[in-house]
Image (cartoon, rainbow, N blue to C red; front, side, top):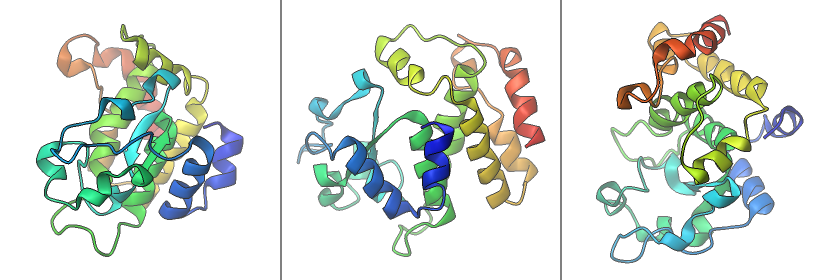
Length: 199
């Protein structure tokens, strides 16, 4: 997602944006999980740089994990409820969920938030700091967004504004996906962390 596209969709609500992405990329190639709660390998489009997102993540967390998924309706795994997106689009989906979770969301589940601070932002922090993965599928995903750091920072600013610039939130945004694996150093991310703090 480049800046022009973000400006076009920035006022969409979550469902509108899911619909927009399904028109852009199509619905799921198949159901995300089989009825035995195993991930269907045919669902993946990472070779095209796209991730699969569950439309019902505004209702429940971790729908791609069988342990969590089986506590929710199987219908949520069906192909019509799968949305493909690049990493920045995925980040925007999770921010929209944080801004307006479903009224029927699971109790005690902080939908959207974990995807932002535990997965997507840490990976993009590393990418925009120069990390190059050895995984070919991930390289393709990164190549889709590498030139759009400006959009990434706009999205994080929006996220920070929603949480009223909470220092705890800002600290969580300044993290690395790969540093805990000891294949990257937090020091490499100093520049992007500085930008995030200044937003």
